[in-house]
Length: 292
View: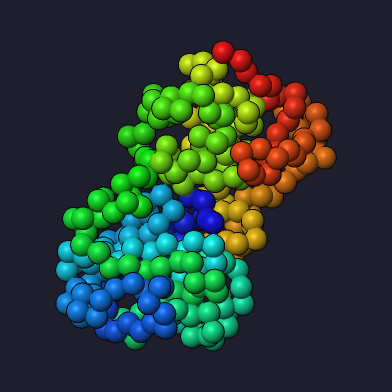
């Protein structure tokens, strides 16, 4: 599943390419990928104009002037590919569909704009979806109602992070960071990277963290996410950036997939363990388990 930086890079590409465009038609192959009624599509999507795009956690919201929005979740193998006059870009699962002629066997939804350009939603495993929903009611959807704040929101502070984390004081810090209901958009790569930056062992209980740890973790998390966006996301098999190219964050990652290599900070060999159900990378010297 994509993490925040990967979805952000797709959002940035769509924002500059489809904002202001008007929908002419939409076709789809399976209802699961496009779970919308024909009446709603005809009334609120066809002939509607894109007036804005947002990223909410790991989902994209395409806002329309009909007071409806098209919610897009790529899940494991989803792609968005835009084709316009003399321009094409794609983001998502890096299969050949990003480069080949479309539609192909993985294409689930085809949106055509009035200027002839198209937006393809491809999804090999059919886990993702594009859902039309009233914009004013989006926050009431269970998916969004449970979603924690965005760590890159300008109003989100280290004090907010502390407050959110302290809802689960008996849990390990890494498992809480991975909980989308606590903070949204953070997955395995950036949890490992931000914990290394803050010199916190992933197994440390939230109750053992001090004020300095919260400040360090907040600074590290924001820095890691912003740097990854700048680099176009990770190359973690499943996602490429909004230009249809693999991101290169992992080339400069400090610990993720660096097991056996020296820690950039102290030179100790980085190790990989199994923790919180995920492969976890850390420096055993820089990141000691803290106790309350």
